[in-house]
Image 1 (cartoon, each protein chain N blue to C red):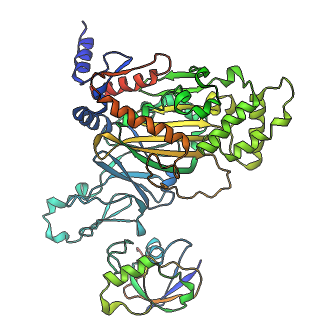
Image 2 (image 1 turned 180 degrees about the vertical axis):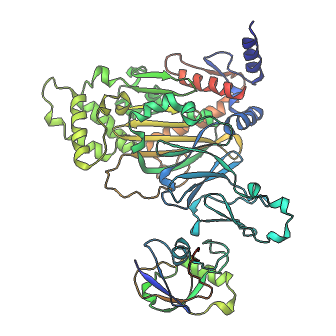
Image 3 (image 1 turned 135 degrees about the horizontal axis):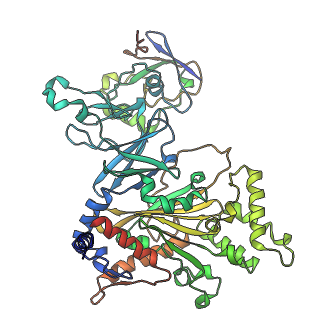
Length: 442
Length: 107
């Protein structure tokens, strides 16, 4: 055995409940406290993660707090419109400096305890009671706010708590390029809300790494086809770094039936207010009586969408309709964010541990869309936190998904259950995520 | 942009739409007294409206509540407003505030 191989085996063995078989996931990974603590230390403290959308902090001095387990940072828009991120703690006696979202009037970050202040670029601007301290207690480099790594991509701010971390593109590059191809940078918030789920963060997000649960979880989307619905109507891919995707195969096969295509999109507009939205439905409906015998439905949709977007001033890059993802699909960026694009819109999810507990998570949902260029850029804010079964505030489709996730978490603890068995064809993305996680934890 | 006059120095400050009087002062490098910087905690930024009250947005219930609860009774004069909350909708507002200083010119 070579030294390298020996080292590799040794480090893999050091990860508890490791993925020793690609298609089996040990159950303890979803509830074991030791595993959760290892994730905090080796994953969350060292990985690139999406901390906020740029739209949350549009003007200089705007800030938003980002929490991951016990860690807290805040992102601040600078006078030159760049963004800085700071560890959220007063260097005097640990008071948290920023809470939630807001703006720092006068550009002053102020500690509510003794009134120490910093400029929004992190430099100390006032130390109340300075003469009462020994000078070595107030060294400039220790009193200025400590920055974390920040990069901007996809109209979002990404942070890394590890000062030695590499670049964001080295972490998400291969899969992120797929989203650049569908103009992720043009997407803005239509709505954004969250729920708290009694499930491990990975359990919650794995529900969205495959599309074949639609037949039973979202029966309305099969339009009555039931068990005759083929489970393999999507193309699945995995990428180095733990990312995965699936996408429509419509570029290879076209739609067979206009009414089915229309009804499917209408279900998304009605049941989700995302991916397909009312604006798209008007365009799709306008096609019905333009189609002649033998005309390609897909080509008609692409043509009419482009004509509408150009007329409305909605950016639509040349050739974007030749990307399968533009028609429908999903890209998961390790460790915890999803985009589900369709027609210049996207649904997005971010899933994080909640309350520092392995069996609770915080699940955020965005409906993103591409607005006409003339629309004013307003500050995006969370609409609220709603119960997972609150039908007044959640569309039908997420309610259906949420209901399974907590039942899965319960099932983990049933005697005799050892762990998940994954479909080679449709669930490789889940395995890929877990194996990347093991590489991080080693 | 509406202009607010601050007595006793007859200082004039332009206030942009959406920002408060104190934010406008701080943005333009005026000194406007405060210790909490817009948190409605310190009451140090408070001023008294002397004229043109119609040019000011009325105080919110939250602002009034904070003044009632946190400001010494003897300072709660008629027309007292927190400059960090005071939004302006037109010209003609005149307020009195000690301690407002124009930007220091760096030589």
